[in-house]
Image (cartoon, rainbow, N blue to C red; front, side, top):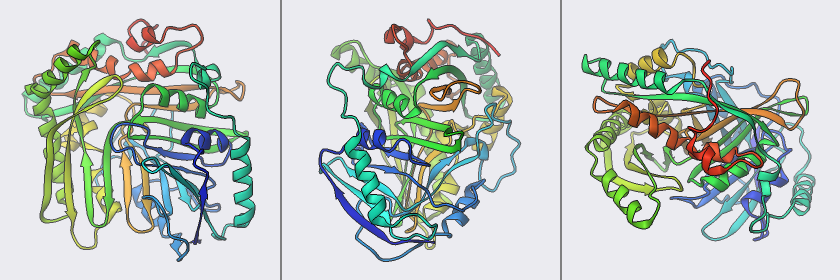
Length: 482
């Protein structure tokens, strides 16, 4: 199959939300969304992956899968993605090239979701421009470019306009129902924190990222749930991905508000941006400044960031030229709607013959959501959490036909599935919250941090008449251990 791009400008009034609403019924809908934070330059909405291809089962399959598509000269392409693979990798794939025994995901999520894409829209938020990119006759029997373009533009014209200020918008049609169920009680989570500290004390590892899971029933289309999440917590590496048609609706979807970059790779340069260190926003500017300063001077958080930066340096060193890895901006403080984070950039000049696929294989899964050393921390996580993570702490992104790529880390992520036997608009979501545990961790403080990180996800699920503030606190919601 081939990618011969034809590029058409879209009107300036077309924004990301309108594209997603207009094309929600397209097969294989996927979006990479720079909704806020930094950088917030490019977004992408893709649909109609190439037909007749098997589903990859691992990263090696994805790279082989990519060879099914070849680039053919066409119109100059805007944006970072030039046709290729768009999708998500589950955490339970483990470290590439290592034999690991990881537990099963209780929702039985596919290890890889996504496909090969030649049809997508690209948005440049900085210059307020948008383009429709269509692959001419890619080889799977789809209609010609003119027919596809007409259908897509017609759907855009018929799409509902954005909600007016004060309008409930997606909240009116998509929300949580019933209790938010916590699957690991706080006492159990705290006991697990103490067990990690004991293992650190005896030298098994230095740090492990420990998480626990929530679920809640929902009503409404997963695209509307995503737009609600987007309204609560805008981040630079957000995304939406639907997979598997099932009785006229998708079999599952990812709704992601991630602030964290696993990998950005272009023109022989790779960058990873691990996050370690979290503090809540202050109630007023004075308190907010105080919390920023406390985070920037926290010995525990700085040590935690340093451990993971060192791990990422080692991972990138496997694919970099000798002496080609450096750390920039250690530490940098970034601020989001509900939290402050500490981050640092780890950059690498790649060795000859290496591309984004090689870097992804070296980094995956991201060290910030495993711990250090990576294999030892993953064994500890599997032992204590006792179930697979599915897509949580995996990655969503692309590998394109030039060997470029960009992948986030799937944190702040809702995984949606339809509820068996229920109506077409009914589903349920699962999400994890967690944090890095070191010897200096205090169990109750780590427990509070997980609730803080879950606040935006819980608020995005607020049902009619429910106070978002109460949901954001998480602790006031019904809990259950299973």
